[in-house]
Length: 165
Image 1: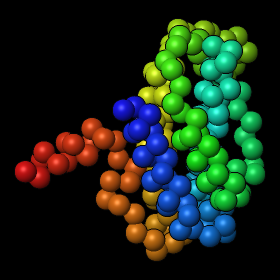
Image 2: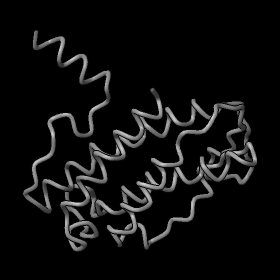
Image 3: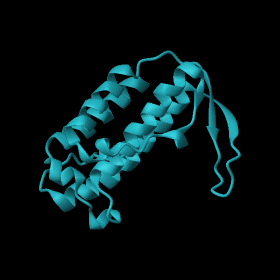
Image 4: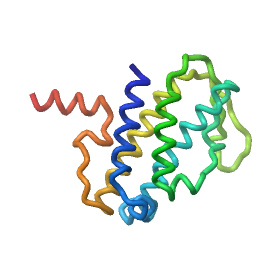
């Protein structure tokens, strides 16, 4: 069920990107502090890649992402990576270590016990958060219509539905 939710969100994201031109995807948006939709997509993709790469070693460090400008400037490449993430998300749960420094003035890192499913949940929520920002960017650069639930967490959707009844 968790992986199904991730796949649905990634499909929703990639479908919206398919409707943008390469120029719209990479265009700096004033409403996003001059970042592009592509930069937000790159950030989402790279966090999933960190989780995928850390799975084998049981050590995940989101700070060690590549910051690959090809992802943020090439929509087609980004969409193919989203499909690859969706295809590879069905892994068994297992214990992992999350490593991070959390201090901009120090290179010293801490290690926290976690597990694969917990990190998938984190990445899912993180993706939805960035999709809310991407929605703002899409409104600025194009006239495409997104679903009313685009960039909303499932708990928010359920709450809104209960209020409407």
